[in-house]
Image (cartoon, rainbow, N blue to C red):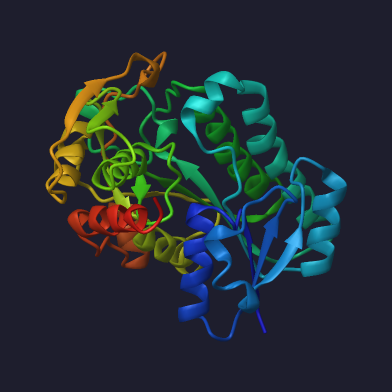
Length: 319
């Protein structure tokens, strides 16, 4: 029976990918990595159906033992320090977790001579400073990263390319644009706004919603569409290639917020919060996913309004 390994299975996308594989690939064993401090909330409803393996990606010995024990056929490398603002406060840690963790994974695969396909969760943040004439962004657009997180993802991206060219490691890089939905970490903008609205509705906090930069334009895809794309990447993608995963539609953060507010009856005041501003922000991220669509047939299916409703309902059930 083939084995799929998800690093970061306890996280946002990882838990949704595990669910998708269990529902759609009945003939596959699903493994996932966790650390002692990992929160299990997102996967407790499927824990009996998956195999959990303790692993610290920063520790090469830990990674080596995990790969030796599991011997996966497919690896979805999702584990990362994935929050842009955190990377400003902890740039070195972000680089170590994201780049060195991936090198440890690659080296273990080579050492144990595994013939596996590795999907690397890269990011649209790699594009960074994008000019008006460059949108929608294609895969061959210059990378001009604007945060330590984005730099770390450029490193992961090019390490994937380099290990494919140097060793024939079957890596497939996916540059995913903003994705959201139920279980999105509350630090991320869509989830943060949804949680604030849910708390206001229940009277937990005053009817004031705090915001950062509302003019940034983002391309949002539902996480459930994204994890389907991750499977298609390893099933139909070409090793060594890079693919954008996007919706091809952009909204300002303000437009997204207004869509969320329209789902609530609460009277809410919007207040800017200087602490939510970044040292530098990417003005627009709008992706062109034609290359991936032509290779795999994938396209997003879940409407953005449905994504936001499901996200708000997720927080309503939890606050």
